[in-house]
Length: 208
Ligand SMILES: Nc1nc2c(ncn2[C@@H]2O[C@H](COP(=O)(O)OP(=O)(O)OP(=O)(O)O)[C@@H](O)[C@H]2O)c(=O)[nH]1
Ligand SMILES: [Zn+2]
Image (cartoon, rainbow, N blue to C red; front, side, top):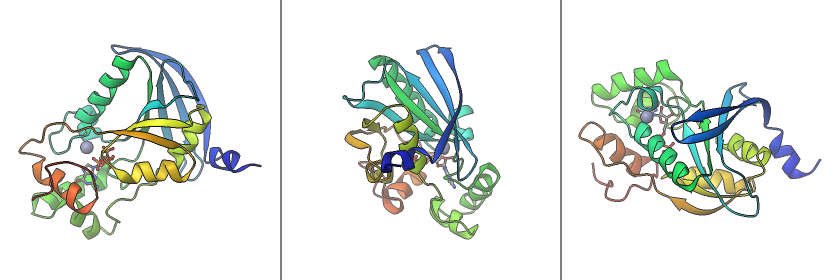
């Protein structure tokens, strides 16, 4: 089997259906990650042309931010921004990765929040709980894009690790579009910590 075949084998497409939304029609495809058995989602709008870059958001699940509008992070607003951008283009993909809490799960994320309320930052809270600062792997994202016939992307992210992970597995990231919702008093320290300790490109957020 060729290299691309091996990379694709990291995920298995399970099922798909059309999802009409306020943004337009999405094709929703569920993939299973062969290593973790997690179900990751691809929301695909419009036609994919593998000869051109596809607009892509690789989004890690954040129930508090995505679903309930938490101000502790910027996830919900980033997802809304990505959806808006894709709707404007009429084409693009959201890869919705079930990596709640940077991969530590929802219960542990709330434990990390409780530690942050005692004065620890988002990175130290993970370390105190016995986890790495970021437990995520983005390798399955490249596999999903290959299944979808995508070879070139414009990636909506502030996280250079996502770009590196996709490029390492043969997906060309031709452009990065930042997703910078305006900071709020509730998430200013969190965003500054991400810029300082996790390498996120958040212009103007390098001071705590
Ligand atoms: N462990 C932990 N996870 C968090 C915390 N705040 C948000 N998250 C999770 O972080 C993930 C999102 O990561 P971010 O660091 O916001 O952003 P990113 O995905 O690395 O980069 P972008 O593409 O720029 O959004 C989601 O899975 C959230 O649930 C926190 O304080 N602790
Ligand atoms: Zn969040």
